[in-house]
Image (tube, rainbow, N blue to C red; front, side, top):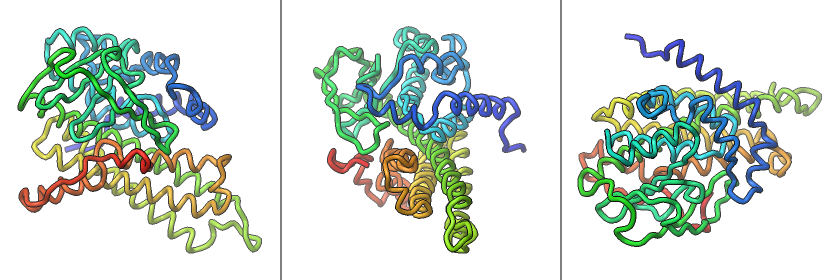
Length: 354
C-alpha cells in the first residue's frame, strides 16, 4: 500500500507554495496586522480563484470536491508564510455544511464559499470565543444542545485582545433561539465534534509550516552570523538545537498526515489522531520558536526582525481548536478508558492570550 501523496496532490501543494510566497511576503503579513479587520477581501478572492476556500466544497456546489488529505498540504503552506486569512474556520464550516447533504442551508452557502463570496465561522461549545466572527458572513454557533446558523448581522461580536496580530478572536452573543436551527441533540454534538477535529488538524498543519519557516530562518542566520571569526552555525551546540527541533518537526508531520486521513474518512480513531497531531505539531512549532529566537540572540527580540511573526503564530495555533490540556486530556481519556477528566478547551483568559 502506498502511504505517500499523489503526484497531483504534490503539484497542487507546489503551485500554492509558489503563489503564497509571491503574494505574501513578511511585510505584507505585518501590514495586515495594522488594518481594522486584519483581513484582505481582495486577497480572499484570489485564494478562491485557485480553489483554496472551496477545496472541501462538493463539485455539485462549485467546489473542487477534495478532502482533508488534500487540504492538509495547503494548510502547511499557509503556515509557512504566516497567512492570517480565515482558512481554518471556513474549512470547519464547509465540512459541517457538507454533512447536511441537500439541506437548503448548504445549497445556499457552499457555492458562495467556493466563489470567494462568503466566509464561515464556527463557535465551539466550551469556549466563548469565535475566530474571525467580524468577517464571517455566516456563523454556525452552539446554543445549548442545538447548533444554529446566523448571519453576521444577527450577532454581537466583541473583540478580545491577542498577542498575535494575525489572530482575531471575538466574544459572540445572540438572541437565544435566533437564526436557523441546523441540528440539535446528538446530531449537533456530532457535527461540532467533527468541526473541532478538522480545525485541530488544520491548526497542526499550519504549525508544521510555521516550524519549518522558523527553522529555515534560524539556519540562514546561523550561516551568516559570525563569532570568533566563524559562523555560529559551526558550533556544535547550535547544530544540536537545530537538529533536535527538525527531528521533532518530522516526527509531528507523520501524525498530522495520519490525522488528516482519519478526518477525511471519519475513522473511529479520528479524535485521538487529531489530538496527537495537534500536540506534536504545536510542540514542534513552539520549540522551533524558542530555538530560532535563541539562535538570533538579542536581534531576535526586535520588532524589525521577522522571527516574532512566526513565533506569535506558533503560540496562537497552540491555543486554537483545543489547547494542550484539552488534547492531552483526550489522549489520556483514550488510554485510561475514560478516567481522565478534560478540564480546558483551549483559550486562556483574555489578558493571557498568546
